[in-house]
Length: 159
Image (cartoon, rainbow, N blue to C red; front, side):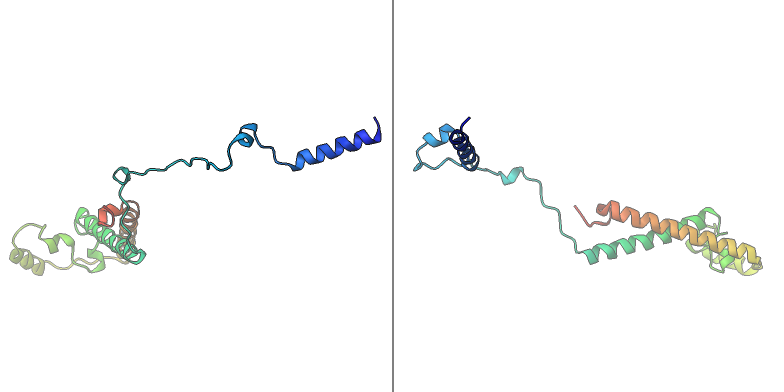
């Protein structure tokens, strides 16, 4: 090939790469007529309701309350299920006696408690009762906090 033919082909290839490629239909359209834009229609009745916005401070406060309630409820249930052996070694009156679950009227229960000698617990029994009480409180607190975080509707934080 000649040098002039090669130069013409190179110039044509350069111009062809620089010029944007437009479809023939676009070149044939009238420039005065704008292209129609698609219309977006939204029916507000079909949209789901917006969630309520709860301040983070209130949400954390409710989670802390649920954690404490879970800990207290678990300790009370564990003391009732053990027949008062969970808190008695620690020197705390049993939940059953406070709630009147030991049977009899409060006057007869108080008279029987005054007449009976207080049991003496060893250091090991007190230590085990303390560890079990802490474990029950930790487990119940964890459960209460978990339920408050995963199911905020239980606390009334969402509807």
